[in-house]
Image 1 (spheres, rainbow, N blue to C red):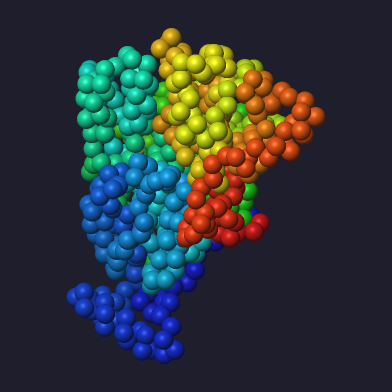
Image 2: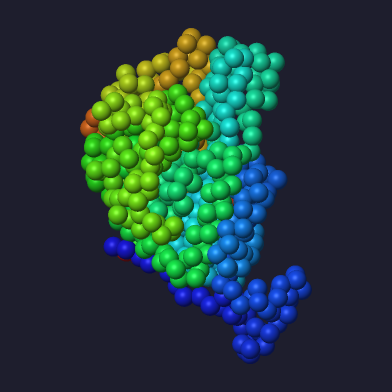
Amino acid sequence: MAASPVQASTGLSAGTVNYGDREFALFLRRAFIKGAGLSDEDLAKPIVGIIDTGSDFNPCHGNAPQLIEAVKRGVMMQGALPVVFPTISLHESFAAPTSLYLRNLMSIDTEEMIKAQPMDAVVVIGGCDKTIPAQVMGALSAGRPFVVLPTGPMLSSRWQGERVGACTDCRRLWADFRAGRLTQAQIDDANNHLVPSVGTCSVMGTASTMACMVEAMGLTVPGAASAPAVSADRIRIAERSGYAAARLAKGEVVMPPLGEKQLHNALATLLAIGGSTNALVHLAAIMGRIGIRLDPQAFNALADQVPVLVDLKPGGEGYMPDFHEAGGLIRVVSELQEKMVLDLPTVFGDTLQQRLNGLSAMVAAEVIRSQANPIYPSGGLRWLSGNLAPSGAVIKPVAASKNLLEHTGRAVVFDGLEDMARRLDDPALDVNADDVLVLRGIGPKGAGMPEAGLIPIPKKLASQGVRDMVRLSDGRMSGTAYGTIVLHISPEAAAAGPLSLVRNGDKIRLSVREASLNLLVDSETLAAREKESWHEHLPQLAQERGYGRLHAQEVLQAEDGCDFRFLRKTP
Ligand code: FES
C-alpha cells in the first residue's frame, strides 16, 4: 500500500478565506501581505512554507533562526518565495504532563496550518523527541509536499575528565547521586556540563533515532540526521532543504509516496542504529496516517536479521558528533545494503542508491561497524506478547543486562508515579534484587504515557550496588536510558489491561528469547481479580474539559502509536 501526500496547490491563490467572494478574498490577501513589503513579482512565485518551532523553552531548537535564514536562501536560489510561520514547539523538559500527551496537538496544529495557508511545499523544522513525529504526521495528513529538516544534535562535553552528553549521562550521574556515590556539590557541578550547546540530545535517543529514520525514508536531504546543530554542515543542509522544497513546489521533483518500503527502511534503520523504543510508537502513529499498521511478527523477524551496527550511547560508547564524522546514516545504509530498499525516491529528487554511489571512502570508524563485526548480532529491539501484554510490549535487549533477559521474579507493584515516589525508597519496602518492579497507571490514558518506565532502583538496593533489575510498565522510557526495562505494555492498566490484575508477590516471567511476557497466575485467580476492577483505582489524566478531554476520549494504545482515533486513516 502506498499513499501519495501530493496535492495540487496554486501559490498565493490556494485556499482563500470564505467571504462568499473569492476574488475579493484574494484581493484582501494580496493587500495585507504587501503590507510586509512584498511585491506582485514576489507573489507570483510558488510558495514554500517554513515551519518555525524556535522557542525560548526549547533549547533543542535553539538554532532555528540560523536554519530558517539558510532555508530561505535555498528557496530563493530556486526562484520560489519562502514564508515562515510558527507552530507549537515541544521540549521534553518543558511539556507537562508529558510531551507525548501534546504530540497529537502539535500534529493537528501542523496539519491545519499547512492546509489553511497557501503554500506549494513546506519545510518542517523540528528535532526534539516528539516534534519530528508530530510534523510528519501532520504534513502527511495535510497532503502537501514536505521536507523534514532536523535541528541536529548538540555537542558532547567533558566533566571531571570524562566525556559526557545529554542525556544518558544525566541519568547515570543521577543514579550515582541517589546511590551516594556523588555529593550534592558534584551533581550540581555536573549539571553545568551535560548540555554544552543547543541541539537535540547527543546520544542515539529518540530525537536522533527519528532523524535517522526519516532520512532512511527519503524525507530529508542527504546527511540531515546527524550534522551537529552548531556546525557549518547543518547550515548547508538547511539551505539544501529549502532548495529541495522549492523544487517540490515548482513540480520539478515529485513528492515520493509513502508506503511499506519506507516502513521497511525505517524499521531496519531503527534496529541497526540500536535506536529508541519510542520510535516504534511514533512510527506506528506516522504509518497509521496512511492506513498501515505495524506487524509484530514481521518486526521480530526483521530484528532477527538486522545486526546492531552503531556504537553510541545509551547502549554503546560514542556520541552523535562521532556518528556524523563516521558518515552518518548513509554509512549505516552502506553497511546494510542488501537489507534495505535502495531505489526509493527521496524529496531531494535522488534515491538512496544514488546517495550510496556518491559516498566517498570513509575513515575507519569505531562507531559504525560492519555486519561482520556488529555490536550485537541481531534483536536490538524485541516486540513481546503474552498474557500480561496481549496487544504487545517492547524491550531493548541491547540496553539490558544479559543475565536478566530470561528471568522469573516476584512482582513488586506501584500504582502510578505518586505511589512509587512515596514507597520506592522506604527502607521497609519488601524488595530484593531479583524481584520484578511493576509500575502501572502510566499508559496513554492513565498519565499521557510519560517516560517514567525507567523505575529507579530502590535506594536500599542501589546502595548495595544493584544497578539493574527487570522493570515493567505501561509507560515509555527515554531513548537516552538503559536497563532491563519492558515498556508500552498494552492494553494499559488504566484501560483494564491484565497489568491491573498483578498483585505483590505474583511471579512474572520475561523471556526475550521467546518474545514473551507472562503473569504466572492461574486463570481462576485472574478471573476473580477482574471483578475487583482495580483499574478504577488507578490515577487518570484530568478529562473535564478542553484538550485533556479530547485526549482521554480519543487516544489509542501504544501499538497504534497513541494517535487519536479520528486522525488515523482507516486501512
Ligand atoms: Fe530535546 Fe533530548 S531533550 S532531544
